[in-house]
Length: 58
Image 1: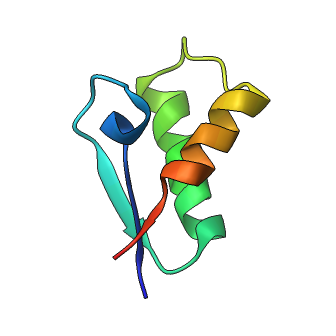
Image 2 (image 1 turned 90 degrees about the vertical axis):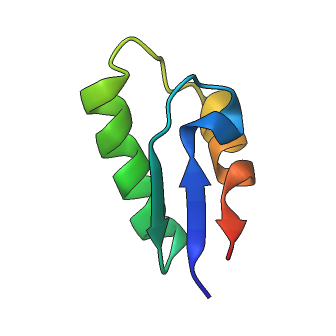
């Protein structure tokens, strides 16, 4: 199965989305995107937890 994530899944006004085979791959893509496009968003443990919870199996 493939995993999917969009910024909107955690309430961010952004249409970016990604798919990957593993959670590790998808988290790496999310971290890269966040650093490049949302540099002012602090990746707190709570936000990282919300992001992990928002990853869907598709």
